Image 1: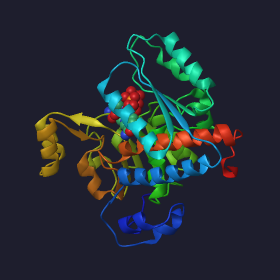
Image 2: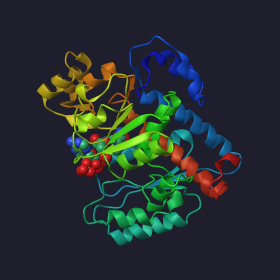
Image 3: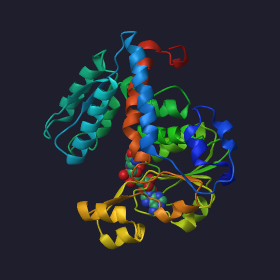
Image 4: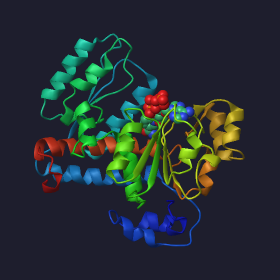
Amino acid sequence: MSLPRDKLSPMSLTSAPLQQPEERDQTRQHTAPVILDGLAIAAEIKVEVAAEIQSLAKRNVRPGLAVILVGSVAASEIYVRSKVKTCGELGIFSELITPPESVTTDELLAMVASLNARDEIDGILIQLPLPAHVDTRRLLEAVDPDKDVDGFHPVNVGRLQSGQPGLQPCTPAGVMEMLRRRNLSVTGRNAVVLGRSDIVGKPMAMLLLNASATVTICHSKTADLASVTRGADILVAAIGRPGYVTEDMVRPGAILIDVGINRVTDERTMQEFFPADAARAAIFAKRGSVVVGDIHPAAFATSAAYTPVPGGVGAMTIAMLMSNTVKAAKLRRLAPKGDLQRV
Ligand code: NDP
């Protein structure tokens, strides 16, 4: 079943109120794809999170996030700086812990134990990747599941699978928010997820299933991938291969969600992906690279809606982390039985 493209309009999708999904599917006669603008949606979420933080302050609750950043990986430092800055902007207490590269697993476990024990810390984030000598799995499992704002702990994986309230991984949760806030209904649709990683593919599939999509998960061993992807009303690509999903692999009118973030450093490849795109060419000339997703940009033209790269799914991650931190504070301090409706 494909999403009827004549029922989508970018104007109606951006201007109607939240949480009234079916109502906004009523507009007609629009054929251009809707761009799911992650920056705009993230901004909406941050405004709401800031308002929630203000109302929690009246109850003497200030959400707190601790970030452990080991060593000095340039990309991780940029991400973490951005996370800490956003905490400050929204009113979340944040604490950055920066052990050296030589830190041991036991020392990190002791840090996590101390953060688990502190009441003013609601979220604990361990920035990945960790140095090779650190036991990443042991460390992630040491985080109190109620403070696991990345949603990676097996307890939260189980909660997600059984539909219980809990903390969900930021990237797939962000995709669900984009669909929900732009009134793209998931119920009954064929959703195909490319990729089965623990942090994106599997939780993405579970969230779509919980939202009553009919879900297929594909991976590197899937036979005749194109025949599966062509059946997708909603296609989520999270494989880490630049432009892998081509036009012939998607059906016109599908919703295309591109999680991939791939850096292209070869000028000819860049031009193949973005022919006659002066803006990208300028970025390439300045930085020596451009970012491309897992879906070939040419495939977006016939879609009903799509997430651009950059400025799509990737733009949502920090907003979802902030939202998760507030949710963790509410669940742990105000609604330990998981009933957020009563908070
Ligand atoms: P992983 O490398 O952990 O997983 C990739 C998955 O894709 C695997 O399940 C793999 O299959 C599958 N795969 C690889 N090649 C193919 C293929 N040719 N056909 C079908 N399936 C294939 O990656 P992640 O899940 O961590 O990330 C995926 C992408 O998403 C990356 O580009 C990453 O940068 C990006 N990302 C973006 C985020 C954001 O905020 N936007 C956040 C996290 C990731 P198999 O299991 O068989 O090996």
